[in-house]
Length: 303
Image (tube, rainbow, N blue to C red; front, side, top):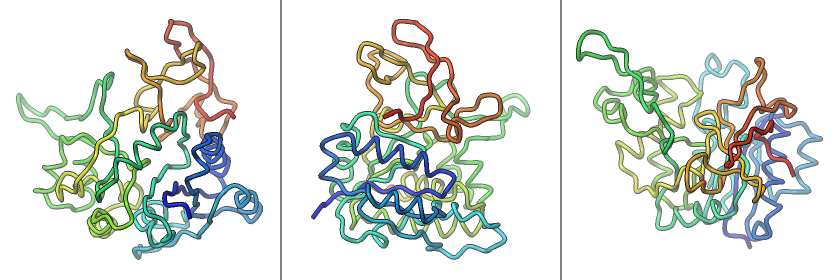
């Protein structure tokens, strides 16, 4: 029986990305020791049939916390903002869970191993969105002299979600945590903290981003024990483009020593001519190599 599992979620529109994520995982020999489970948020029957030949389980995602229809507006894929906080309920047979958003893919198996190692003893394994090359981590609007209005992502979302000002201030300049890749053990206390905070953020704010804000509260306010992993374990391309190492035929960080990117994450999309690379694999952009050449490439997984 496999003890560790990688979980993702998609609807029919994001099925090609989900398929690429699975293929990027299964090309590594070590993946045979890890289960792959999928939450269905609107996949077609044909798509699920295709997936069943590749994965261990598929379960229908639910609204594990009640959300008004007026907020959902038919967007069933938003279940991802709730159901990922309840993974042990959906797939109870496993000891360690690694969530990877379907718009991400695995470039280096070492990152998978790091996430499973990071969550030992009840800790949360996750990556902060800050590192070399990040020029702006928080925004402020300067009003007069030294007075400014805080516009950081955490603070803005906390205020919109009616989180207390005391908690919002603790989040204001904390490095933002992206929830698109994280790991937790089945019996970690972090699940309960996250779920309770999620009830509050869903009640006061919008659905999208609610689970990310809730996890930031768990880490920075509730102070759940956390193992912060390097940026290359969840490389968000919209924040900072990677470079390409032609000699090694792989994606790397853009600054020395050009560490290999472990998980490539297309969160927020890569846009060209008003089209998102996540929905159009034909889109390519100019990418620098570590020797200074310019290549026209896609950032999606190419098996």
